[in-house]
Length: 194
Image 1 (cartoon, one colour):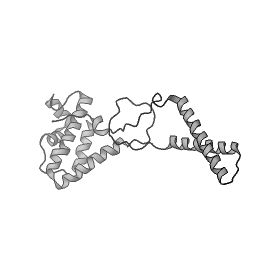
Image 2 (tube, one colour; image 1 turned 90 degrees about the horizontal axis):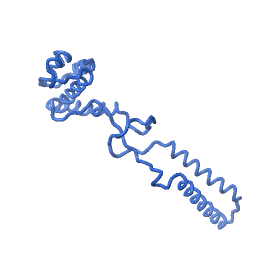
Image 3 (cartoon, helix red, strand yellow; image 1 turned 30 degrees about the vertical axis):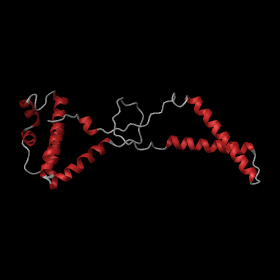
Image 4 (cartoon, one colour; image 1 turned 180 degrees about the vertical axis):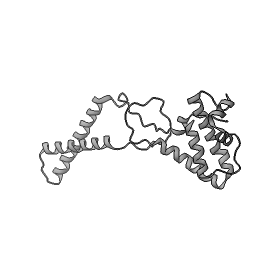
């Protein structure tokens, strides 16, 4: 194998969201002060604008209205899904226990990652042996390593016994043409049994 990847690397997709550091933005007191200052400026502009057109509205109602609109905007911003990240960097930290509503489903990303190469392999058989077969071999080695502490390279005899003759032959001798979807389903089922 030219490169090695674990099953987690092949099947995981996590996006790194933007970091919000309270120290950079002045902390909670700074945010509250900026919100009060911004709302006071908006109230002043509205009072001047309304007086310029000849309308009189109670200052208390105007202040309450501006703060109500501000509160609704804050709640809507907190409930909105995060924007899609542009990079596909993995998070170095573990799961923090919160649900990331904006993250893509790792299973869907893995399936989509296999769909295009499998589709290409129907018209170009060399694509199957060059792209799909090495990935299947990596998955087989990773499953053998995780469940039985061997790989095809480290202990070929035990790996062959664990894989079975059909799967071993499929991985070791590239087929002349890509297997049919039914044959591939059988191979994947055997791979899952490891």
